Length: 361
Ligand SMILES: NC(=O)C1=CN([C@@H]2O[C@H](COP(=O)(O)OP(=O)(O)OC[C@H]3O[C@@H](n4cnc5c(N)ncnc54)[C@H](O)[C@@H]3O)[C@@H](O)[C@H]2O)C=CC1
Ligand SMILES: O=C(O)C(=O)Cc1ccc(O)cc1
Image (cartoon, rainbow, N blue to C red; front, side, top):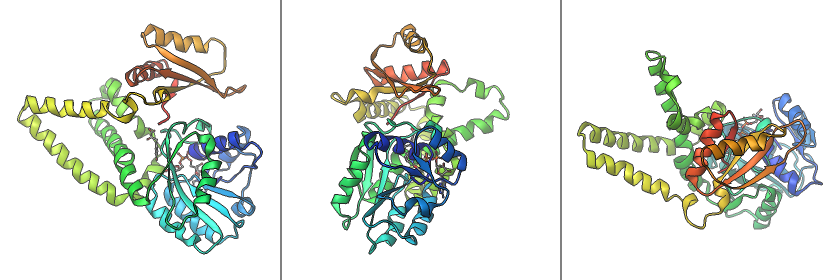
């Protein structure tokens, strides 16, 4: 595993769960992440020299920022890898990476681009969870020349993620991920900038910034290094989306200037209908889509504290499960709810009580 942050760590845990006898070696430019990964049992051993780690590897996973992934591919191409080795990545963009990986062609190495479509605004191996990708889509971008046996082998390595594998072309991936993931991160950061600027004249503002503002800007707390790289990689898609967004904002501006009440109502109503109809809310969706994960300290009474908070708010839990509790580290509670709004309310009130909560899709 090259890169032992949130995603590398989570994938390593998921692989180890399904393939307990494999030897999992880790490499990272931050030695403290490596030591932490080893002491948390995320990897078996770490190496401080990449070549030493990869020489015998059946599978190499790149879990580093996307521009660094390109640089790493340049480096790996110059090394002698084990015959039949699979190289994959987890980067949030695919076109540039898959293009770069064409350099493996003609060698006995298969590169398959990958992107687990779940995560969090947190970084670092301490935040890694084996169940992070459960029920999430995991996009693979094999090319026409990719041997399908290798794709199946890779899916088998990654089985413990419990993700749903789908295949897309790198171009389609970047367009879709641009719309539903990359662009919202720009909007979230820009909303925060707007508040930060106005706060200079209105110091009360950030104290008042609660509820909806916190919900919509959670992702602005994500890693600036990672998002800088994603914007650089997906430039064309994002510039196109920004142009469309400006048109959309002009439309809203006109509606407000004209105090056009029925059109303003329509604006919110059609957005609500579309959002409420997103697949996670369709009947028959897997109930675990309404799961909420809560980090809890490993001490007695914590479960009744969490359930008590929800009971006082009249929020019903349909299932509760304790995941991966080990001594001395945080445990994780998986709470299931009947609906998305119930889960949203639970997230808000548990966060108010200082519990770290996250949704894994
Ligand atoms: N954070 C998220 O929610 C998701 C992130 N991704 C992708 O996963 C990749 C990793 O992101 P995270 O794990 O979230 O970030 P992270 O910041 O938690 O971890 C990245 C790790 O890579 C290491 N690193 C950086 N450059 C390196 C290099 N040249 N060689 C070795 N190690 C290096 C860092 O020291 C760090 O430990 C990124 O490409 C990101 O686009 C994909 C899905 C979700
Ligand atoms: O925190 C969130 O909700 C995210 O959006 C996580 C995320 C970040 C990057 C990805 O490529 C995929 C998922």
